[in-house]
Image (cartoon, rainbow, N blue to C red; front, top):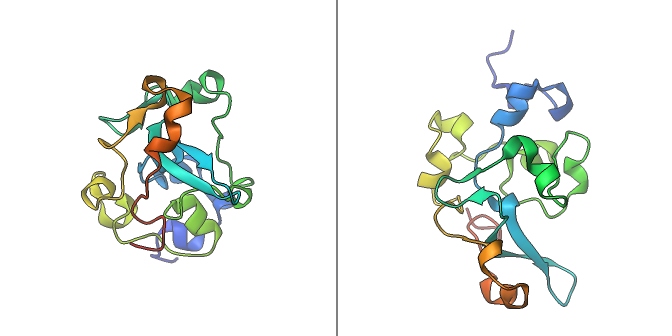
Length: 151
């Protein structure tokens, strides 16, 4: 039997629901409002979904998020590869692409706060989309660590 961590020996489809959920590093980047630029590329903002709690870095209603936010995409092993907008540091994306988890990922460090400590989380750095007029969203475009090839 292998001592390798589950994410190195299992496909996304083979993971249990607990293993699947543990892949999320809690960065919150997938909860950010994204805009499309003039070239059709998506850009991130510092605006978060109305359910994202910027202080805790968690969804306020994770179990019901899809019902409360109709455009919230529920990740599955089958759709991860189709979602080009997923954060470049996202564990689901990395595993789907056959890559390893970053050294700051909680599954690697054993520390649930390691994503935040490594500066890879949006926690504490966002404004709820509910507080900003949609016409002003462009003023919130922002580069986030790990999303432009930096680590």
